[in-house]
Image 1 (tube, rainbow, N blue to C red):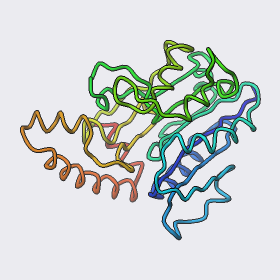
Image 2: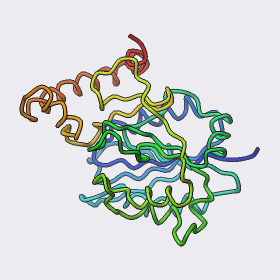
Image 3: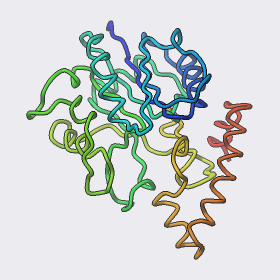
Image 4: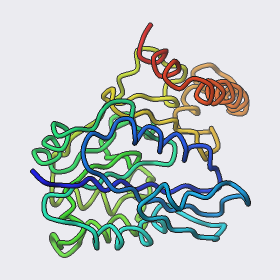
Length: 262
C-alpha cells in the first residue's frame, strides 16, 4: 500500500530533544515519512533546522501550549495528506527506540487510533485515558467531521477532563468515534522512577521531564508513602534527571538497554 507517515512534535524552550528525535526518526522509520516541527520561544543560536524538517514553524510566544502547536501545524499536515496516510504525534521528549514499519501501520489501520497509557500520570490509577505523549491515527480523521467534531478541532482546543487533564476534547472524541483505542503500555524492566524515563511497548521512550517541573501526581504519592515533604522528592528527581540526561547525551543506546534489562 502506498502511504506516508506524517510525524509532528512541538518543542518549547529546550532544544535538547530535537537532535535526538531526528536521529531516532532516521534510524527507525522504515516507511515513507514527512516531519513537521513547531518550535516556540527557543533560545537564540539554538540551531537552524530548516533543512531537517519537511515543515518547520516558529513561534515567539512565551506562553505556548500543545494546542497552539496543533493549530499551527495540523492544517499543513492536512494539506499534504493522501488516502491511507497515517499521522503520528510525539511529545518533545519522546522518541522511537524500535522500527516503525508496515506492520505498525497495519496495526493503526486495524485499531484506528493508538495512544500511550500511563496510569502513574493520573490522579486515580484506574483512570483510562489516551495520553498525548504519543498518538498514531488515520490521517482522514483530521479531514472528516465525526458526530459534529473533527479530530483537528479536538487536538486544537483545551478542555479539562475528569482527571484534570487538558485533552478532554480528544478523550471525548475517542469515546464517541473509536471507543476502544489501541494502547502502548509501560514495558520497562528497570525503573529509575515509577513515572519518568518510561519505555512503552518497546517502541517509544518518553522522558516525562523534558520541560515540566518534576512534581507530579505520582511524586505526591511517593512523598506520602515515604512520609517526606514533596520538595524532598523534587530534589531527588532533579538529581536523577541530571544523571539520565547525561547518559542520554553520551550513549543513548546504552541508556535504553539499561531500562530494558535487569
